[in-house]
Image 1 (tube, rainbow over the protein chains, first blue to last red):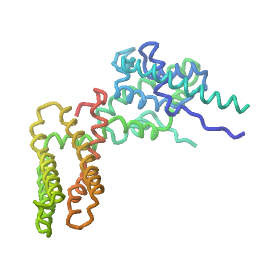
Image 2: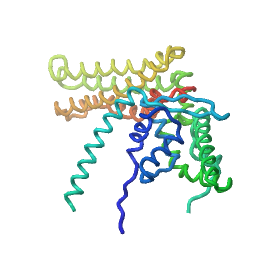
Image 3: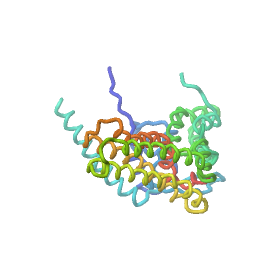
Image 4: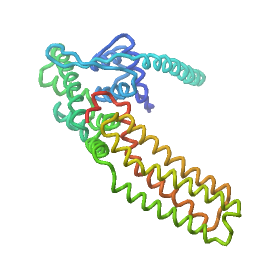
Length: 109
Length: 229
């Protein structure tokens, strides 16, 4: 069966922001939460998470700090005020988008 | 079939061309991710060797990450350029640019002065002369960069980048304005179209400044850990 390509491209930053809205977290945990919460539907290569996180940090949407944990340096990220505002906008935008797509697909059945 | 990497190979490929500061920061984070991943796999009863392969596979293709990292972090070349910009003012480029601009500006004015019209009586030509002089002044200001960069050496870097941004905007607006005015006034003679010369030079300058602007885009808001140059 032909399968349309639907991937995470473009929505990963919003998913990261949403994950961080529950509290500060490190890269591995963010990736695991996204995969777990989507029940494996949203699968992505974890190496792409870090450029996305660093872009969010560059844009001031998240901030980070390093902690030593079990002898390892671990970087934690947390949502900034700007990030929180952006997340609210992203959620609204996504709902609008999902409703539009949903409306079209329902109409086709 | 996908190539199998060790963690070290993956990091080298993903951080290709980046600065040592960026590489060190990314390496720490990816290594922590990898080790956490190893622990999780091993906790599920997977052998160490298999876990190592799986943990790197989970990271995906390093080239994909490399293409994203390069959009966030400075490359070695960009860092070098930045250092040169900060350490040594562009005297040579500024002088050549000034001479080139001055040459064309003088020719523009000279051609105007030898047109049959009496330029100071013909309203249209007078406007053109004023416009050419205005452009000359604007561009002279641009070549003052060299002094400003020198003075900025011990000042905030942000001011410097604001200046690069200002120049990029200037070089975009001035040519657009020149062409608009020329179009509106429908100047067709070769002599009068010489006003366009500074505008054409400015377009070359846009290309020249494009790289600076790329650096600015990354640097002005880059994470603090990327700022050490």
